[in-house]
Structures are given as C-alpha cells and as structure tokens.
Length: 23
Image (cartoon, rainbow, N blue to C red; front, side, top):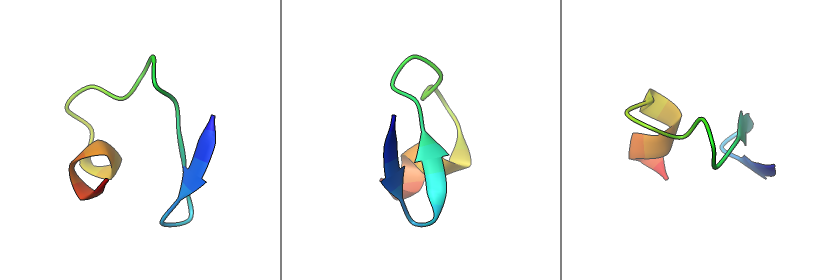
C-alpha cells in the first residue's frame, strides 16, 4: 500500500475510487 493525499491506496482496490482519480 502507498500513502498519497492522506489516503491509503491499495493497488488491488484502486478501481473507480475517488482516491484513484486524484492519483
């Protein structure tokens, strides 16, 4: 997991999420 924008981004769960759109 990587920490960006104060959110924990999981590559496996990074699909269509708002956090993924910012990254």
